[in-house]
Length: 176
Image (cartoon, rainbow, N blue to C red):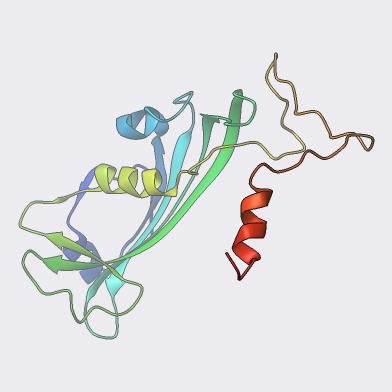
């Protein structure tokens, strides 16, 4: 296992032949597309990447990513610190190779002769792992100033008649 700085460009085929494991961190600010979705670029992405071959002889890249990001809570509009975790398994294939026989649970990663841009791949995985609607836990969330909750209906309030109630009665009447 190699700990320390993870190179930004790798050749997964060579790493798989050596059954290499990479473990390290990248500064969050290095991921520009991801930071566009965040309040702050403070923090770091922790990565654990394993390269090897499976039973079919396919080159496989398994990875775990962890980071805490600050996003705007959609409930209270204040910054929320949210954990983001991503796990992935890629089968590394030559460009143009068929993906029909890939085992279930593998994503295809087609590579030509150029090295893999690992930063871009990790950023894509983190973007997919972001919450669709970022929010604090409901018990921690404060409503924004000026927010007024809908009033509770009083017990004494008389229910209003539905103007379409007559149409519902006509619909039930078989003689109409």
